Image 1 (tube, rainbow, N blue to C red):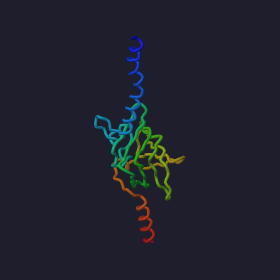
Image 2 (cartoon, rainbow, N blue to C red):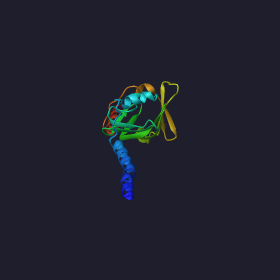
Image 3 (cartoon, helix red, strand yellow):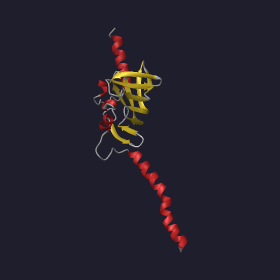
Image 4 (cartoon, rainbow, N blue to C red):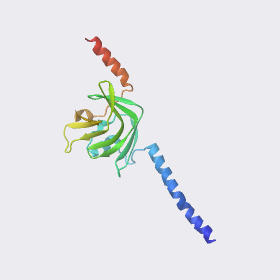
Length: 172
């Protein structure tokens, strides 16, 4: 009788890790926004970052206040023209801390017809008029004004490249 009672009480404890793992993987897969109605565009300024770092096609995001890790899901691939053409993959991940997004994956910038991964985005503390993009071992300083508004996506940056090249070629 005692061994069966012990097994009866111990069995749910053995299943607890599996239930916790399943719950965490479901939460990460669905990536719902926080229940208080905060959007990713509201969250960025709380960390000293401009809201226009991400395009207007965010469908969901998840954020861990404990370690700053985030996942942002877009409705699809996206191109936005800032001072440079920027490509956003459908999923963007990284770690956010006050004034910096590091370990960034899913954002690229085009320079001289070559696409480079953006590894980190930083702002000055205290705040200034500039934002810095780390692309490999190069840091590019840009005006922060262009990131204060949320931009709409273009679905295909290659068409824009060909159109711009054709226009500049025939205008000579």
